[in-house]
Length: 374
Image (cartoon, rainbow, N blue to C red):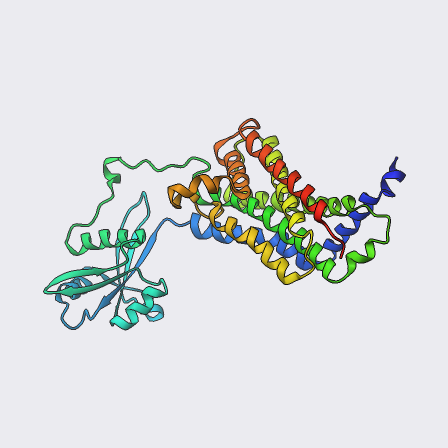
């Protein structure tokens, strides 16, 4: 039995592709290590931040802006890192429950203030007209709006107090409510898509462009075994990559899986099947790597932007939400995220499981039909 298995064509192809990947350290880094580093960076940047620093540009405060100048000299404090970034004054609103808000003020002219605004280093420009402060900011920027509300309260002598003193705010500490809890399932889904699309599609197109597939026509190798071997190796690699990502984020951020492990494995496999099928279809005909790049990006880029990997797709217009929710990456992301954060079970992900599996089988059959060796 073991001898029959070791001599089987599919087994030998799978072992051959596995060795190709293992011998390429770059593939292992970009496929396994890089997603982990990205999750650590984004998790640290957006999760472990309690105190907030808001930077304000003050125009000509030393010339005729008496009210602002008086505030900077009497209420604000000299900024300890002034030599490094020229924000010479600071003012802090203490808040033990939600974190302190510190305003840093930089005296400058309009030209430099606009450059700082365009670079995202500040979000409010403060001027004075007839003894009254004026605030210049983008009203569509919620962060700038919040800066304005708090800053105007300070300059008017009415600091905007958060209502923690009377107990109105009850901080949520439930598992699954942090940004890292939102991010990791999205990264797992996105990695499945990109790994399948680039690993399978580009791998096949690259072999075809180098005339390697043409040589295989002369062998007794079955087309299905050739493609399934590609998919199998990518499945295993995606599983190892996702398991390591979950392990590292569990150790560093304490992320947990609240739902069904069996359900998670099922939706993960269905997602792999869906994108593997699409990858086979995309790579079925072209031998030009430039065209291949375009086709892969055509599939990957739109879904990476709108499918809720890094932020909620509910920020898009209401009419677009039903369309976005039907995309394969959205169904995979929602399924994994629901199991991680909402405690969904196997029955809850049955519908996306069936749809993703059907997408995979349909496109694999279509790719097999149009596949050409050269």
